[in-house]
Length: 159
Image 1: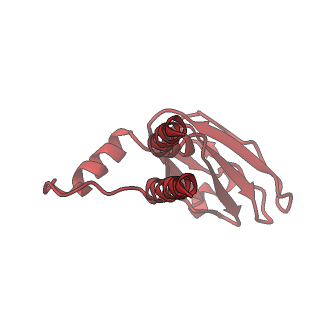
Image 2: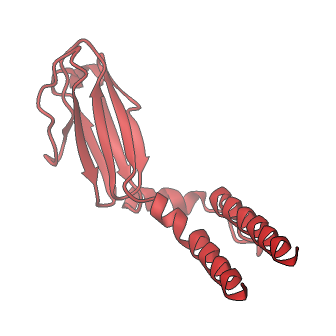
């Protein structure tokens, strides 16, 4: 029984450390292609995130990067069609709709870790005052449920 208790504690520790990293992988974000605007137009994502543009408008639209990295081609209005692209490299990627760029249908995808994101993070970082680090809600939930499980096992073993 003691080995089971140690195994439970080690498993809980591994979950607390590894679960947030696993959940951060392979995220997906949706951007609407409405009539003559993207919603939201500017997003910030983590590396490895797939962005999907979905045609919600009645006009035909594209999502086309200025640097030639992607081009959805024309997606007909009212079709509900979509186009996806996975962003692996940090940086800021500006894009537009070919027929509606002049009307302001432009946007950007900022992938964390890029120069612009690093500069913004440096400017927003508060000085370390030596206080305790904050625990993520997921880690806290796992910790509390693990302690509750250990208490249950302990009481069950004693009865």
